[in-house]
Image (cartoon, rainbow, N blue to C red; front, side, top):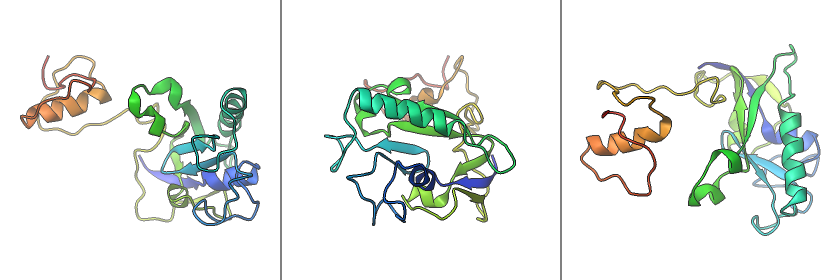
Length: 195
């Protein structure tokens, strides 16, 4: 799906007082972690600066974290572009959508962008830009990083998918089986190439 506009999550966080100081340029260089409650890293990830989990965390687990998460979801889902279009379709709580032992490594929130929008290239690297929203001037103009409801999934394959109601978690077991490899017992999903 093409994206025409970039959203810098860290700039938005900085301009809304969640990332400090107000003149910081990168979470890798000049952030004051003692005053920062949230930051963006990667394409869709938003992390809470949780005390005890992050090296310089300040947000207490429990009520403080919950309040901050709900506040961020509410505010981010109401962001609009200069022409009034909604930028973010849904902000997903990873503790509600993921399961398993590796969830401790996941961001706290996944930002699901509307059609025509995506995280800025600078957000992916933890950088802060002057503007929150700006045009995508990259030759790379198509992406799959929108909200799951915008791009529920696409698989290109030269073999028929025969599993009923195939899901994303079924892709890996199918690929492993096709290459004659064992599917780990901890892996969820079924082979998409068998009924």
